[in-house]
Length: 477
Image (cartoon, rainbow, N blue to C red; front, side, top):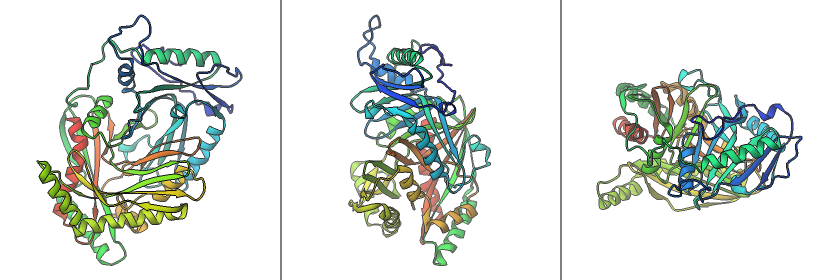
């Protein structure tokens, strides 16, 4: 049962609608509801405060503060922010055919959902895939299948134009109207005890422990370099895990806000596992794939360098990156592989010029890539073709996967896997699950890695990996 919005704890409708076998009906600002079936309604949350409320409070700000506590979070650099609460349906799959199985299960779900509202508020499922196709037994990833997606019982969408939409699922027309009204009112009313701004510091880090010591890292790189010297493996990405013990419990909403402030051009996401398991969250800079209609977009993001203390120093670092043979070779491997993975699906590919993308603490070489599909494809078909990109796996993919399994001293779980959303038309967007961690109780396990090519230096690669831990660590401190 839903608790009334306005109570301290808000829950969604947790009974799976997939169990009913009935159709779902979507409407936008319309209430001609079929009382025989569950319904999905979406309406815009007003930007003016309702009568009788404190007019000094911005309801759009109230909506933003309310949804920070939702367990499903997604945001991109365009201003699109989506939050979900409750589980109307859950889709899971394991094994090498997991992408197909998720796609078919979701197709059956969306086939029973009739929706004629605005595209902005359309129902979506949110989730992701583990890096490897088998389910992990590592306790860090307890509750996470190798593929899992959730259709939220309540979905709130905020756009860059400050539009706010709420979409709800309910078991009958009366419940739908009631729930919709309560959620709309609750979302635009600021909680009395809510802070007026994000906290300027995190829960604090009491201690950290690593899965890989510097000596072990050197041994791992030397083993990988031997395989590269043998001639078949050209690049492999090796990663590390770091567990941070927190001084206080984690407020995930505030942590994501700090990541937004520090990395406004990156994605932000949070997705929980089943039951009372942890939450996978992060601020990845890299798009895996975006698909809308016949358009597909992706990017190569590989080759990293430091930020400068001044704009002039920034430019010097960027110039060195663009001229560095090792970085360019590593980057070009990624561009070449991505284009090869997309070519079977497109009429043509457009490859933009290589450029430098600056983040708060690091710079990356970036090449945008786009294409026009030869026929309509589901975004999951494209995600499967692209995962893992050489930026997180290696070249060739099969040898890189084998090397990662043989070499790394931890289970990647969902780290570096596709994470994102898709809708009933097969459109959607996925980021690569980098700059990420799993939060559970008073611990957060972080992940970071680096691309290894023929002339990689273990010490330099170690330092670069530590740099990639910083975004999440700084958000926790």
